[in-house]
Length: 149
Image (cartoon, helix red, strand yellow):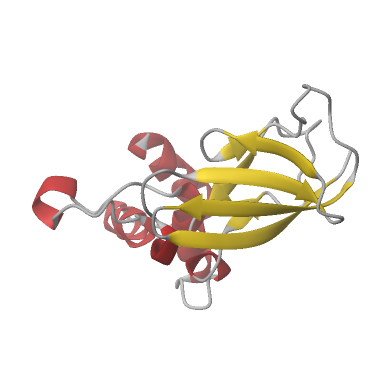
């Protein structure tokens, strides 16, 4: 996974040295709550790493303040799943993500940090804006996601 991420960084920044690629990967890593001796730099995060590589900073990164979904807008016909990123303040155990329409109608609860754009019956959801609610042992956060069919 790390080698693949290094290749993605290199594809965006072909003049980066190996040391600069390593720095971007470390800067984009998320802590797992363990000590630096047992976790190294942390769990890799492709979105954060590429943002750091391209912009040179994570300052002002919305995903550090609230849950985000990417890509957003999500086009299921082009990309099979949308991924959710949880800010450090919400990272904890028992992660649950529920998707709702803007009117508050429940669409689906997802397992893990991705969604395929389908409702609980397995049918594709309509184009529109959806609200997702992330709940962990550390608290609750909300975000919006646009689906384009």
